[in-house]
Image (cartoon, rainbow, N blue to C red; front, side, top):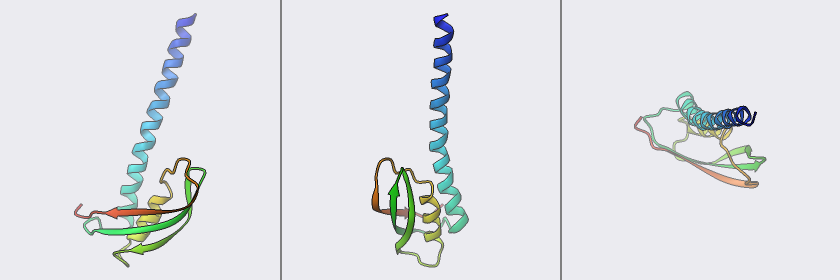
Length: 103
């Protein structure tokens, strides 16, 4: 009877690892979607956001610097910030984004 429990526990752990890996890929996908939706991936830009971090998420973000104003990189950065994992960090944080261009 111990072996079926071990097998079920192993399967549960595998599922948890698979979900974590999927979530990581989800963030990369979100970054790509945001950039393609809001800005030209051939252009380069740097954007600095100032946000409130709490409960592992960012909120109340505002653009404090944008090297390519009017080209949509500010919107792409705000879109990415919605899904950016913050861990245990709390308070006001500055979040730099560098879009290298050339894609």
